[in-house]
Image 1 (cartoon, rainbow, N blue to C red):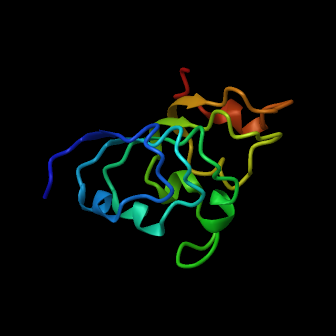
Image 2 (cartoon, one colour):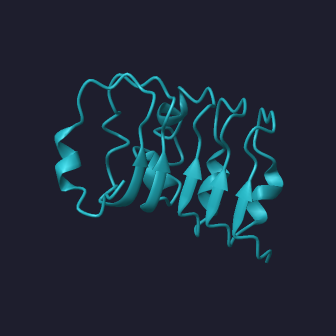
Length: 134
């Protein structure tokens, strides 16, 4: 068991996530901003202590569709990554609207960053995010 709680791999030019990260079972925060990640491995779900993940600045346009495929079925990205509380950074993703798949299991979010997207409106589900502060 490795006791790393926070890991900042932002702006490292990563094309894929190193498999050794999956051994960091106590990891609570993972910063992967500004890399070249196009997919997230399903093994990321093994990081059960993960509370926060920053993914902005990566070409992850297919991420949410990938999470709908086996073995995870129709699980939300947030639920899959065990980021059902605290914070989620989805800035600079080019979203014109938020995927409905994403908006499940988010009722405990405290922080949600949607900066630099093309959103014209926020879904009604935002009225149910009682814990959202930022």
